[in-house]
Image: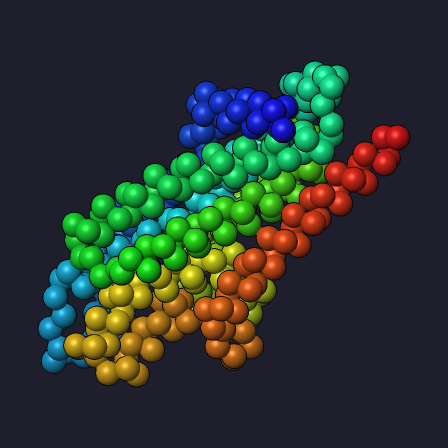
Length: 299
């Protein structure tokens, strides 16, 4: 256990000391923030206005709470995966630099080495995402606070599960990488594409039917929807209780991905959790199997 903890400590320190790796992990969230500040914020406000009956005057605090909830749910959904991929690139970088060879020469089991990378990746990702959650809470408390204590706890649970998902997925993918070019290629693809396919940059409802069907098979989509529900749910409920008919609120949930559909069947929140937890278990199992098979080949 002491060897595992030492390895986790070493990997975590290396990640935060490597400024290139650290700032690369923040590229996608920073892009999302830049897009929001420049035009996405106004786009979401306009979309909200389009769903609002003209005779109803909605307070700015609800609008800002709703739009802010969308922004941070998208940002957190992206962070949990892209930061995990960048942090876990240390696994490949150690192969490139020869550090992994030095580690394997020590009296250290291959399984300990593999889980050391996994735990340190999860830890560094959780640290960064926790800072993002705190920033989210501070921001929403200033512009429009409609979250309950339960909502905040569920957001923390969502972030934890998405971090485990991102860590497990990156562990499986990075197990097959061995060069600097592959690191760059995978990092670029994940940073550029994940925000789109998880519904962070624009609502999934805006895509074509075929793309919506494809995205409905991706576990990350359900993690993003959970965050949408828990960060925008309070504002939605306020609208339903005091301003909009329930039909209008349901339409807004469809438009902003709080409601997800799998072949026209609405997916409930417990089902979303089942998909996310199940995918984490499957990916961790795949990671263990990959390391077991690699160990047998070397023998």
